[in-house]
Length: 206
Picture (tube, one colour):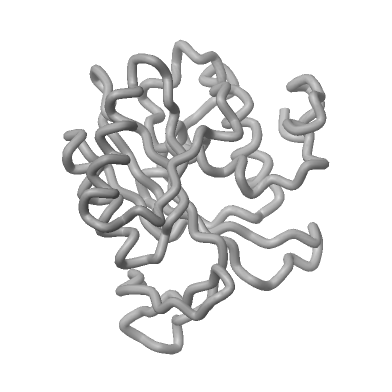
């Protein structure tokens, strides 16, 4: 069932409210990942949050993708960020800030501040490289800690990606995964491989 809205309950936690109150549950640390439209690839925005209960096997908190948006125009990404900030209390977003995209970052930041969203933070991704992002996402999935029921576009792309698609030259069709890459690293603990400088083969998902 789709999420209708969220209610702020404090301590960086929100209650996700559905049409059926029995479906409501509490999550924490809502964060977003942004991919700007470029060439043949559309833009994309996803919102993630952690559930409060630890997984019994991994002793980690699962992540739910609680919203996703495929967006063709830059101006629509800016508006969607503002709307999801109101709806889901997401105030932390991650986006690549390369030299060719710096003006878009500045435009988004200026718009948000102009309309009273100065509390929103825009940060660089923890996982900059495409292959590191894919491996991290696949590890979350392998551990059963990534819920995609509110993200059909993302779920479809993750079902299609292959080992060969870890090559950066093949990332364009996987725009939703690329946006997820920008944010999912923020939920990694320091001891996970990507933060220990372990080479890519150090991941359990190979």
